[in-house]
Length: 224
Image 1 (cartoon, rainbow, N blue to C red):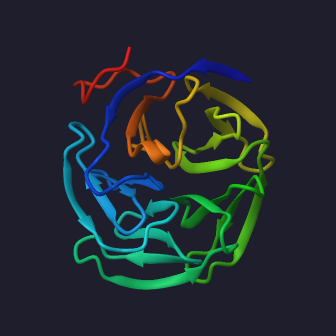
Image 2: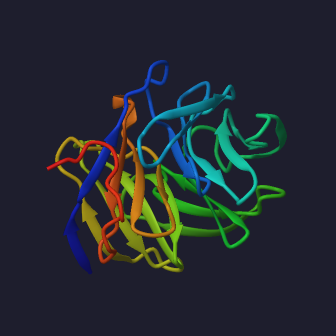
């Protein structure tokens, strides 16, 4: 298993009126993060708040290339990002254990925090297609270049990012976060950046994906 220390290259927030980060996704131009009663759009390079959609946003967030998906009160809602209109919804796998959310391979992937697993869902019905076990609490899920990654956050206030085998859940790679730096929502930009929610701090952090070249331009506040 590969292991490394997290390289935090930018930190944004907290934002007025958005006291928590409950889920994170990326639409190719904007980072979206869930904060209780709204979805917030942020410029990934500057951290500037670009707008918001008023919807229940209590857990994971995803983007399928056209629509946003947001976990809210036992449902996953499909949202038009241009109008903010809710187009449809499906049931969540559990009432209150849902955490991260991602879109990949035509499916939704939802983390189960207490159950310590990742579920592949049919986006039309919510039917569970696959269950992947985890060794730790799952607090964010993302796919990048065929790799499945998830975030963790344990009771001892420790977090890390883990690349796992999508069939068995075996940990293939681990990125350790500094003590007290936690993750509540995870998304990749499809390349060298992970966008990570900071829970009750209301912050978004950008973490370098190991083995990737540095970005062409720096963004946000660099963290030593």
